[in-house]
Image 1 (cartoon, rainbow, N blue to C red):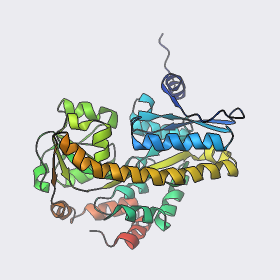
Image 2: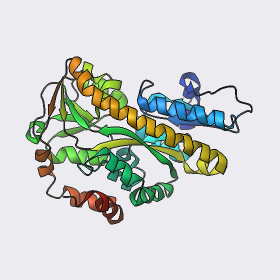
Image 3: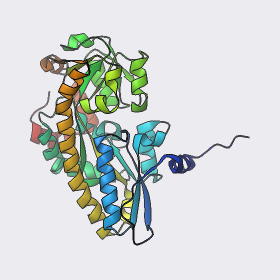
Length: 340
């Protein structure tokens, strides 16, 4: 009879074969804590570099006591982000990076990070996360067994629309288009509201889905189009800036609390340093890619954002205010102004 592997066995056995081991100089001691860091981005991404730099520095500065292994693309885990989120909550992995729109499967209020057209600038996002709204999100995550590491909000950028063929100039151009979205209710609701047909695919299926025509397009910051080579399977990029997205650096709360204060401080210090570097590198890359992707033969146009906003003037924002909660919504509006 074939033996069925548990999730823990799968993570352990697959990890042994394909992990990227983060090592510093020769550690003076054997690790007291060995841990796993998952991310859904490939090894060439700015996020992977930042995480590798963080955990290398932590290993060195804790004299080898905390040794973290970094696994790009969720180490090939079946189920991708939602499955990895469950592993984090159960303690089968210790660290994870995830955007709010999928983290909301465990912590509903986290959808607020990707609320369409809520943020006008990227610095505004960071200011809100460093203030009362961010601390409220911390507490909501804590209640679900998840610790958001201080200053651990990595940049991904404003989301744009890639299409295999047609350009999106106004919202009406999206009518009936099959748009790949992540596995999050807000993504699906937004694209239904603007007239598209949202299709949920995990990011590890994105390239193939575009190549074989299961979807007509996808939406992500330009850095994702580059690191996942979507320029090979799409022709048009329409700049819509319809949502901001980034990656929260998360820890299993029980594991985090098990670490002594001095080790946690080392982690937080290196997170703050490398998050700032990753944000700057990602912003620069997203800007640079507007030229690079043109040189790769793609067509780029600026979409009419007002036509998208007009579609949200009905019950979209009231519906999501109820879903997210009045407290978080009020804290957001204190910083960005009235929505809807």
